[in-house]
Image 1 (cartoon, rainbow, N blue to C red):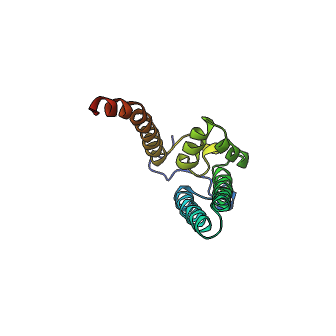
Image 2 (image 1 turned 30 degrees about the horizontal axis):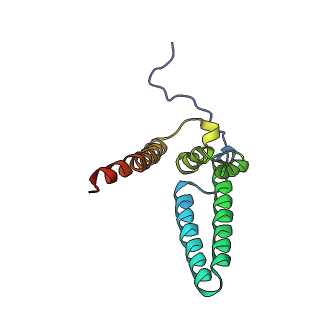
Image 3 (image 1 turned 180 degrees about the vertical axis):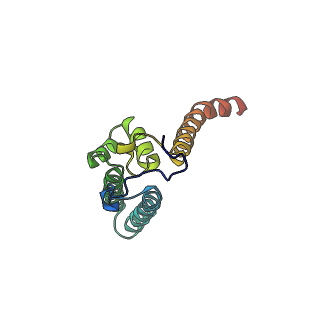
Length: 150
């Protein structure tokens, strides 16, 4: 009979470097960089539109925004263990909602684990809830405005 009070035997030979390393951006740096690209692209768009030419300002601003968003999403998907090609889903209608949720909510190494952590679930609920609230407001606010007008 074995000693029930003995220390359990464990394999302690695993090197810490054998744990996969996921390059790219984790959730918080991704979110902050996305806000920075949004603000920077909008500021450049406004400055060029006012100083040079409105059409040039809009074109340069959108190029900066789309390029920045695509690059940050490639980094984010690589961090999840997925292919960076998922970033092209940003340009496909309806699929871009899933790509947005995935980029914001999925944790580092999601593709290996296959389950969302608690923070990811909260982000998904907030994201889906805000989209549903916006769609509901877009549908019902014109009805209420029409009913209130004299």
